[in-house]
Image (cartoon, rainbow, N blue to C red; front, side):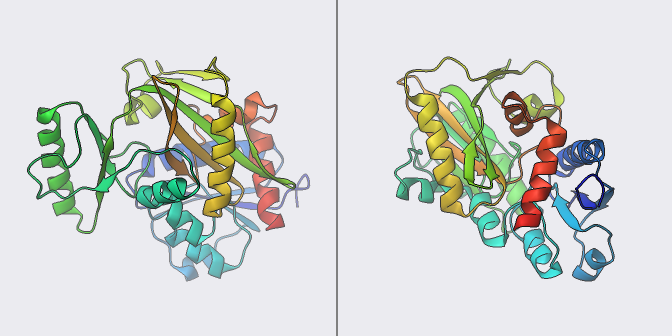
Length: 309
């Protein structure tokens, strides 16, 4: 033990499209934990076997991977068999949250507003729901594979791109949902000893109008507004919905819940991220910092929660 923290195995990389983001996030976590006094073992992985994981050092595992393998259940299943405490969801909750259609179904069941969506069939000549729409993978994050379709031309281009992607990766699924024009909001949720606590709400203001992969990770012109001015009751509704989604999904330790606020002042749930980013642009660390918990304290808290169970 070092500074009341155990030694921590920080896992980075993975086989998913979000591998580069994971490298950045994991570096941020490793630096923060070292600053908090922990002994850190930083290891870049692909798809490790259980035997490969067993020989890696570290009393607690902090898997800082994003995407369907590293965040969506397979790695979590391995870590459960490994038997060491680990940060984040168990396999079942990770799978449910990674599946955006399942997340929407749960939200509807809980009475949380979310736009209807359907799985995309690339054989459909026309868009199955009225334009404008958004097309995105069912099991990816970080805006990977995101297509904004304001008109029929954009829909045709998205359809062609999705067809190529699905041919290269059989079994990959895309979804179509109505485009909500409005303000992008996010609520981080952290598990404390007494239960889940919503962090300060953040509004995302991308310079180009769309919070895509480049706006998240490549550019520095996106603005983030902590606790922005919103219509009465909206912030409270988003925080309450975020905590309910975390409980409903069976999340452990942390998540980030994203919303779009339309022109009528209605917040619509988009998705839940069970291992949100830990980069210099990332929203959960930003929200935790606004609440008085810097990156080192945040990562140390998550390690301690993992030790607790």
